[in-house]
Amino acid sequence: MVQLPPWIPSPAQVAIPVAVLLSLALVRRLDAPAGQWGRRLRSRFLLGVPWGTLVSVLGVLAVYLFVQGGAGNWRNPVTLPFSSWSYLYPTGWLLAPFSHTGPGHLVGNLTTTLAVAPLAEYFFGHFPSKRGENPFFSRTSNPWIRAFVVFPAGVALVGVATSVFAWGPIIGFSGVAFAFVGFALVRYPLMTVVAVTAQGAIRTAYRAVRDPIVVGSASRRFGDPWWFGIAVQGHALGLLLGILLGVVVLYRRRERVGALRLWTGAVLLGMSMTLWALWWYRGESTYVLYRGWGVVFVVALAVVTTVAATADRRPLFGDVSRQQVGLLALLLPLAIMVGVAVPVNLTTVGDASVPGGGPAIEVRGYDVTYAEGVQNQKVSAIDVSMFGETTNVTTSGVIVVNDDREIWAQSVSKGRLAFTGRASVRVGGVGWSEDVQVKRRGWSMDGGGTAYQVWLRGPDDGEWTHTFASGPATAGATLANRSIRIAPANGTFYLRLLNDNATSRLAQIPAHNETVRLGPVRIEREHRKLFAAVNGTRVQIATREKYR
Image (cartoon, rainbow, N blue to C red; front, side, top):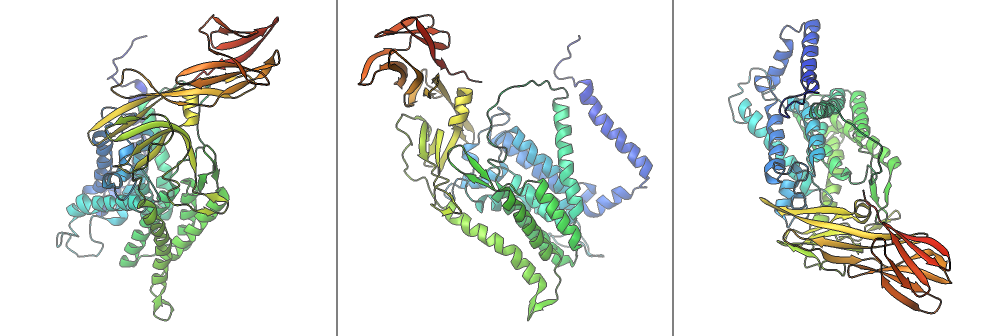
């Protein structure tokens, strides 16, 4: 089989755009628009192009490539310094809404933007809506300024708002993407549903061009619930901001949309975009999803949107108009979100010591360590208990602390490290990044627990630094009325033979194909397995952890 150079596209990669273009040409032939499509686009867009959307997409992509270092490491950009950790760390809340955790996160938000933002920009328009008005009469009506300045500036302001008024740290353009959805929804509800559906098609086409042939096989993987980590409050904030701005434009233009269409579109969008995924922590690695209340939340949001967007200027009671009540209905949940966000985002890490009892790796202000059962300083910043849940949450895993940047984060969970055995934590800032390596080694006792240890290695370190040792683990089997325990300490795994009174023997785990004797018990090692033998009885007592 002939191997093509990597820079030459495969036949499938060529066929995808050709098939799309040919099918569009056929549709145009069948529809015979006679220039109507172009005229309609040019009536709202300068030269028929949604320039503001393109400028916004290029801006977000530039942040990923050149600020987060994605150009040099596409799959593993710097993320920690570009989250909105606190009001006292401006770099975080300024760049968080335009930064992303990886290529999947970036592509997901940009494909949503490419699908929905043009519709929102079409509603916004590059030209004045009044007939006979000269578009170049003022700066605010100049189509060039509206396309290349006003719309992108509005996108940037909404992005910063989703960062400043979010409940705790966020990262990603999804809040702005939801704002596009909310803005377009109030004028073109069903078209917005179609646009959001098109986002999936755009993402699939992108992946098909990038990887036209994918080979997969069954495998075991570690994964949290798919809904864990969804910033629902950030999405809801962005959606409400978009709806509010859209309603204001509707009021100014005296336009109105049918209530049934708007309610239907709002419910469908809320369901399809998982706005119902309300979740919280319940322990270190357990989370609870309030799916039922999430559906109620989506329906309530649809009702508020419909009431606000369809209100007219007729008085409801006294001098209060229906539109004023509609705006109040939108402003009330926004005010509640802002009221919660301000005290949460004013909290600081301060001079908090590095969690855990082991040493940490220090890299230009960052402290990286491993700890278990420590209080999550960000989630537990304000102690609240409601409806059987609490913000007093503990966490275990690789912890990163930076007092100057107000960063306190679990970078790798205990469960993930136990599954993979190794991890890399990237720290950095604008223009620089460094990696701290983490590894875990352990032994699982048959019928008992697991004894393990964790090491760290900094970017300039030649050797690993031992940082954590778990408690001992005891085998379920007993031999000669004695139990066997593995006790980790200072980077070494020790075998202990226990009787009813006290520890009787101590030795290190032997190397492969070697043995060690603990009193009457002989310990043998075969590759990853440990066996104990006494008086002709031989049983397996432990297996070295295997990672994936």
